[in-house]
Length: 95
Length: 95
Length: 95
Length: 95
Image (cartoon, chains in turn blue, orange, green, red):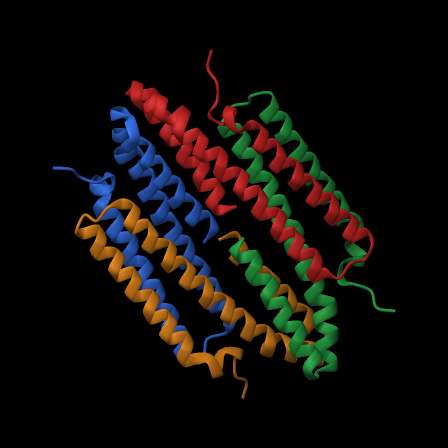
């Protein structure tokens, strides 16, 4: 059975995602309580950075496992994996 | 009493933040169910973009109200508001 | 006669832009001399950051002068200036 | 002898970099001629996007060649290449 690159890292990923979820709930509360705009923006930047860290970890795990495995086997599957990873990186850089 | 720029926009902001919260819970489920890394990354990029939209709306409301009000009054408060807004924009561009 | 916000800052802006131009010429040389990909990427990130700094300075000058002036006068021109600035910020955040 | 991933792509990379260099020279002219701030900002966003495209191409070539080669051989060199590529991606995402 195939397992994904982030499997060993699962607990940490879930923890980070829960923290990001908590940050976003905190931002909702700030909006409801009429917090000053700039303070809300600071929290939005922090949550965005937290999500970026999740994405970079996932990507690193993906390169170390799925892509590395595919390139060891070579052929069209390897090329397809690299193309797919490059597209995901582009979405990340542009988001 | 002073109200913040986003007050008229509050319901839409809360709605957007709830949707982003839901996206992040969805990403947690994807990690728990061993979804393919690239599909998770696509959702992380989408959640990041959703947060960026929240930030850009907050910023627009802030410029239209708090900053515009301060510059109408002028003086050091106006300068301080502009400096503060520029710093928030820089954090956003760099996150 | 109307002058733009960055006028007092012109020399510094030109200096920064010349440096960015020099960085990009350096990257061309690196490509021509078959420099290692990762070292080229580091320079591309540096040049991107330099351009971001130019953009943030221009934006700060624009808010402090053109936008502040328009909001002091108020009316539809002020609204238009804020809309325009917000659109420029969005392009920057998304680039 | 070892060649880098972007070698087949060299002409296109140089062309793109020359265009980015031209854009930055154009921005200098705009500043010197007191062009309206927002129009300059639009050009700065365009030049930033052009550099990002260069970076994404370099990265794709690097993954397809240097990293793929290293992972085929395996061992500590492969791990080092992946770590290095992930760090370059992180710099890009955060710039």
